[in-house]
Image 1: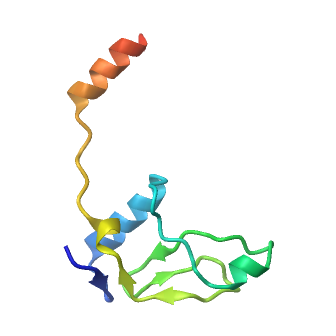
Image 2: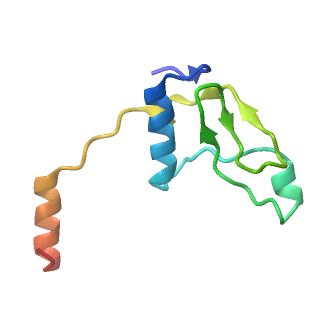
Length: 93
């Protein structure tokens, strides 16, 4: 899969925001220098919109017009049977 460029399809917007909500490694944090220089503006994850990835820090204004392919690649759905076995092993079912 190639990198995705703006404008982003709605499914890509949802996929990237879900990727960040999962706390996935490799999340896309804002690279703007303000986050390195000012402790009042720590690095933060970019938020996907249809027109760009944006930094949620209102004093930053960073926008990115592409998303790396790995961040929106399809991920396997959880296997409920495996989840049930893990719960049984943990004594929680």
